[in-house]
Length: 543
Image (cartoon, rainbow, N blue to C red; front, side):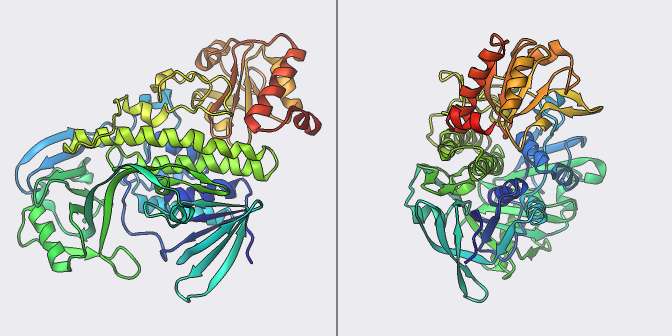
């Protein structure tokens, strides 16, 4: 029997990212994915800057940027609404360049990753394997049981039909919209449900004539997406790479034959004799995928030692480009907590905060995606969400849980990036500083463990935190930064301090010196006990 510490079911962005984040922390992880390989289909088209920050922490941000489908610095990156591609253009919307989105370098060291999901999955899979994760594609979960100490799962090798048991401390279900893990736990979902059903195909064709110069990367003009009224409202075309390969989605069900699919494409393009070659998307030669555009959130994200992440926990329309990033952020939130518990740095109760933090974010983000759906396509789905700034959805979501000290329970679900000034429960501010002669972002300080960041007159906080085996950075000693600028950016004085979690969220903040080392000792011990779910006496014995 194989015995990893964590078994992940599902090899999409959330599952692969979870494997990366766990393996990076030294956790023994096995991942099972029923498909033989990653799909040759983009699905998600972009990674927002907050998600890019997490990939930066995982060591693959540069690879993601190098594999981008396009860059926002092009002269024109447009979203079109047309009757047919060769026919009338009804509306054109220029997309914001990534360098301008979310305040640019003032908010984040990372930009938009304009990368198709299939390319991202290849990079995540390679990174997970490099870090030592055991990746088993062509392998399906057929069942599992759990007890007080772990989970025993049965996995089937689909090529041979052989079954084997895997015993893990925890199981993560990242197996998509129709999650087997969710079904086996009996966790129900809630929300509007299915909005529409879509046929999706990848094809090769020379569209130079109907494009009429509107898409020519060599001339720095790019169509990010094109929305059609023919053959039906809801039909979308977008490029897959920079050659003559395209992705085509249109409302429909079933499995139409190749000829019928080609006619749908020709109708949308508006060229009856267009040469179209459908591209297989799976190893078994399947050329047409069917999927549902849906809106739902699992009622629970945890069942004992089993957790849900990504589309298994929540599914949302693609409008707004929130889905894949939300799933990767789930994986990051869960991975550092699993590691902390498995390594003894935190008590098991820390894992309760995963659902407390991520489920409200999923509900909030789903509401914003539905608002985007109404704005772009006119489809209205009842949800009750109030619109917020787009960049607040990307960066400004807040956590309220028992392991955050001092978060405002009456605050909004998300705040604009300009208001990320170190408040507990928010993503810590980005500030360019120098460490050992090199310029970095303060966000680069966070990852393996909790970090105490203190001002130049916060020595008492720093000394006590070091005694409790917390990573400490003191402005003026460990970091070169303007003291006043650092303090203003983090909402403290020069004698203040923040405790930042491995995911870059502020767990606690002290605006000023707490009254000497004795007072600091009591405060730090109490805060660490709360944010790690361990008793102060245990913390003191291990310091």
